[in-house]
Amino acid sequence: MTIPVAPARPHTDAVVAAVAAIPMLVDRARQPAGSGWQATPGSSTFKRYAVVYPSSGVPDGNEAEPLEYLDYTAQINVFGATETQAEDAADAVRAALIGRRLTVTGRSTYRVQTQPGQRQTFRDDSVPVPVYMAVVEILFRSQPA
Image (cartoon, rainbow, N blue to C red; front, top):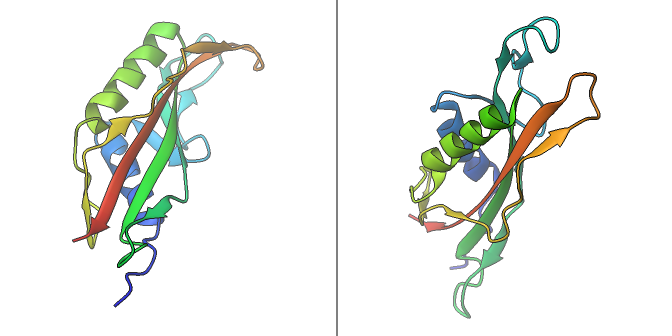
């Protein structure tokens, strides 16, 4: 019996759920509603947020079951009004994910790890009032439960 390629979406659902439970506003590939500046940029409250950019995963296995595993990666960009807020948000995301086994229906997961070569926090000057972004890159493997 051949195991079908595991879908990536349930893996992304697990990442989004873990970040939302921090609590932190989070969405997939776009800014979540209600996040960022709450009124006039630069002179109002800024609600930190995360944007998950998921991968489609890479199947892996052996001769007998070449598609048994799914190696899943995601980039999570976190935003804050200050460098400190962005860095604290990234710390919260790492604490919610790294070393944990996420729940993916029908799959058994390995612990989440960070991707090597993490990028630094940087300032985005392309908007009228600059914001700061930190990047958390993760990976984990799953197999049929």
